[in-house]
Length: 139
Image (cartoon, rainbow, N blue to C red; front, side, top):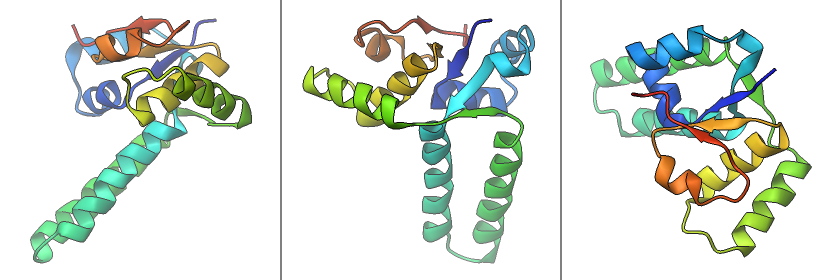
């Protein structure tokens, strides 16, 4: 079995119904496609920000509808823990001083600890991470 860990950008395309991404996801069993809990954090944080910024009842209702839709969508996807082993690997990556963002390093660490490849359109940054398999399903 292979494990494909969707980065936040690909998860967003999947949720929006992007044809290429949806076709690739459909090729795999549900237990072969996952996201890191770090990606869940990114998704929910974005909606929490929208809620705090919402001006007026229409914008607030829209933000709450989108938050609820995101939670329902995420509930159907396997979510990988960011456990102690992944945290240790993340700390190793930080010591390498890679020019890769914190969340991307955390997603990569979780993917590696669970034996998965990261699926992202941000191939350039993720390719800098030692030992990580990176795939782009957006094309």
